[in-house]
Length: 335
Ligand SMILES: O=CC(=O)O
Image (tube, rainbow, N blue to C red):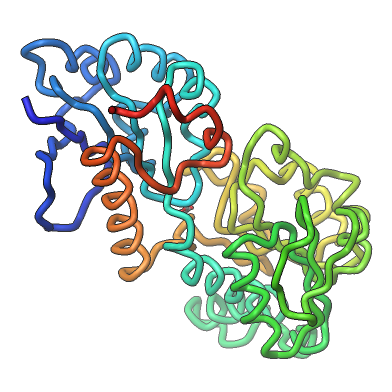
């Protein structure tokens, strides 16, 4: 039997592939996990193409799912079609010899553009102004004279990966002063992109703090009460990464007492649920996790995930393995 790839989640491309694609037909997690055996619809599957949309049917790829998958199937590769892979328990994958790839780069421009929009909208209150026009009250209650120019402000970028750097370039055009903090000082970044030595220093200096680190154990809740209160009064917080990186309760308290003038969010801790208290701050701009999605980025993500799968199926090892799994690869290849 030819090795097969199972598509979990939305998949749009029509292209010729050197392996058969099976689409998910399961309507429950238990059906999914019991379908890899002999005679089952997913028999012969060695790799999965995955999007987060599959969670609605089969749930997150948490430790129980990964262990069950390893026990009942020959799956050795999960190609996540997005840059974030926090819905996959990579430690469990490591224990069971399953590799995970993601699609870094593919949505850098889309996500950076979304962050730019959120920043402009928070400072100039454009989303609020549009809502006043649409509700028939023209400019009221948005008072444009109370809004702020972007030019000349200090943008603090937390995490200077591909998206953070692309956003830095876009924001520098105003110009803004750009500072960043990452686990390490980035190589070959422009001189105008200044490294600061700690997250605390970043928060002290920024008028706008923008989050571009991935969600993992060490970043969960990393922007908490202390970091938010270290920002100057009236600062803006932007998050297009993952909701759980910010302590939502601390953020809402800071909106309530005016320490944060507004927040621009594309992500929330418990999506698709949005805490109703956030809707009571009209000056905030809130998007429904669409930041990394455009026609171009969706195509690029699918192509990149398929390239990773093709390399795995044909050569025994794919590309874009997530950092946590880059060591000890030898045991997990198909060959
Ligand atoms: O949120 C979008 C992504 O992780 O690509």
